[in-house]
Length: 622
Image 1 (cartoon, rainbow, N blue to C red):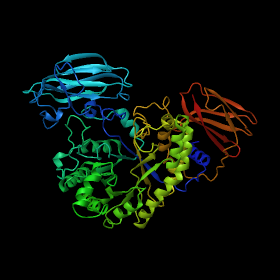
Image 2 (tube, one colour):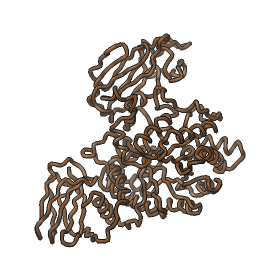
Image 3 (spheres, one colour):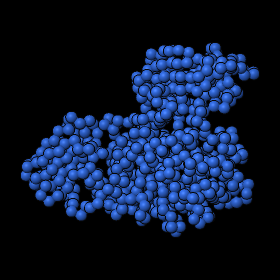
Image 4 (tube, rainbow, N blue to C red):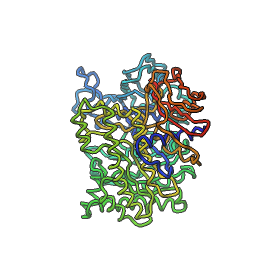
């Protein structure tokens, strides 16, 4: 039995268990949003950890109070790449001179081994945190070991930078990358995890939300020039402008995947044109690019929404959201001009809000006909508000199964919202392309610590989450009535779970060992488009309830009862790899030993040799 057939059968079994119809079409592509670059991220995309460092904060030299930060970083002098022109610096009116420091407040996904800190120029550093064997090798090199990164913290403080030869080009290299980081800037383990997806969306990587803004300057009306984009040599990419476009392009080309880019809301016409030209000229010709203006410009938690309301609506005396449309139209038209001779290489999308049909209609129907190629909603599912209130009343007595059951009940309501958006797409004869989605199990109001926090965290890793994802995706795929696959981009690849702010990652960390830490969301999502490969299943009869398997979960040995003919029995992991292959005599119960396999989720496939009947069930190995 081929590997992809097994995965198709698994989808059928779970769909049947969830009381949903198997969709007639399997035509979807799976994409992924990669997480924003922050010091505490559990995605480790770069060989050079300095690119994930927190923006500089200041330290007072010889201050006996020794506060964590003196909050004076805005008063120091820096060069174009964000490095101080010298250290220490004197600030008028301050008692103490100032150093700068950066920190990584979360090292859970850092590879273990020997790290190397390199820099150009004349300077020195103090280093403390979750590391050992700190050694200064020479005047431009420190080495240290990271052995137990979980819950780790690391701070690097610049204590000297010569004004005549200042510190430049700091590199904090993960183990084994010193000879390769200039040609391969990405962490290979992270690259390996992304290889499954067809498309990478760079919204968070480019810090699209609140792009270039601080709390003080969100309302800056000046449009950004091309020179203000994120630069490769800037000391960190955790700034307000994110990762440079050059690295997005390099990643697309290296992985042979498509890309989804978001245009900053304050980009000038020249910026937008130069951006389009860069992707046109530097992406490989067979790479496809989805292009979107900003992100969720109707979402009031983001600065771009307030900015567009001020300058597109209030100042122009145009109603909201109609005042947003000229900005979307202009940005996409400039990309159209750039790709005018090769329009097959781009998909121009209009982002919409599934829960706000009126606003979505007023944006889409006011765009110039034929100037967009897809309508782009989310594909989140969750429990209803009334069910969330019931969970809140259960409090600490709520279980992960309670959360899963309520989420299952909420799928129909979530699907109805998406069907509303499909009416817009159908009326414009456009496909859907989902910019983000997955489970959206969060408290109400968002950001509070729920009384059922433990259950909300545990539900992310139980087998029932696999069932929920399978049912949900099989529902979504029925919306595709076109020949070409429909893109679903999950939000996000890897992130630390949070009961308060959401557990968005398919994985909890980009180095996750699935044999130790289960990832049912990831397992379900990467299998979602594998049924494309099925050519015929007409000769198969599935008897879902024919046999009994126990105990489940098991510590090793389990039994299958109810055999009535000779069967082929396979033990498979979630990717369809066969770990055991055996047959059984007629009318004989059988014991199977999983003791040699790592903990995790497996599938038992029992196929009748006489009539091709198939029975599949999942089993958890503790």
